[in-house]
Image (cartoon, rainbow, N blue to C red; front, side):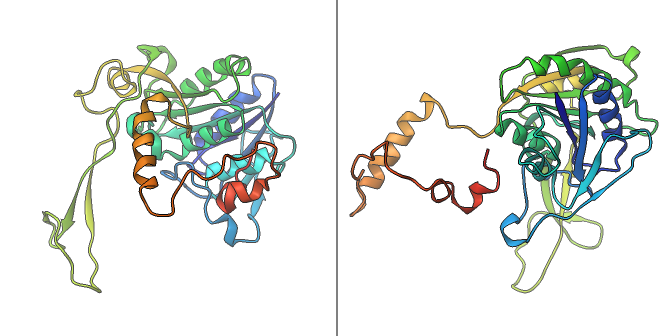
Length: 304
C-alpha cells in the first residue's frame, strides 16, 4: 500500500515530518508531496492550473525522514493530491494523510481548511483519507500524540469503503494526558466572528463606505475554534474544549438527496416559464459524448 502525506503548513513544517514518520512506521510505502509555502485556509483550491504551463516542484531532504521521497510543489495541498493521483510522483497512492496541522480544524472552519481540503480531494479519487490537526500551542508541541493516533487509523482506513474521509482533531497534550477520544459531530461555529473598519488611529468602527479609489482595512475579530464553552458538548469543538480528541467522518461535494427535490422542481418550473426554455428532447444514453466537453475546462484538471 502506498501512502501520500501532505499538508497546508508547508513541506518544511514539523507536523508533516511527524506524520510521515508515523506513516512509515506502519510498514507501507510513503511519499511526501506538499506546498513549498504556507497555504493555510486554501480549502480544496488548486489555483489557476489552466493559465500556467506546468507546476514547479523541488526535491527536499527533511531531517529525520531518511530516504522517504519528499517534494515541495508550487501550489496548494489539493493540487499536490491531484498531481500524485494522476502520476506526477510515481504510482497512485492508496491513502492520503494530511497534516499534522498546527491548529485544529473543527466546525464550519473545516470547509476552508487546506488540511481538510486535501483529504476531501483524495476522496474524490476514491482514496481513503485522514486529516490530522493539533490544537495551537507553544513549543514544544507534542506532535507524537496526533501522529500515534493517525498511525493506528491506517489499517482501519485501508479496509474502509472508497472515499472514506476522517477528520482527527487532538488537544495540545502528551498522549498520557489525553482525557479521551470520541466521535464528534461537526460543530456549527466558525473562526471569523465579525469585521469592522479600522479607522487608522487604533479604534474600530462599523463599516464605512469608501469613496471610489480609496482603500481601507477591515479588522477581524477571530475566535480560535473550540475555545468557547458555548458549544454543544458532543461536537468536535465541544470535545476539544473539554480536553478530548475528536474523530469526525466527512464527505465532500456530492449531489443533494431527496430533501432538495421540491426546491429543484420549483426551480425547473420557474425556468420553463422563460420563453424558449424547455426540457428538450430526451437524451439518448448511447449518444457519443465528448467527456471533456461535459466536464468543462475546470473539471478536467481534477478528473478521476
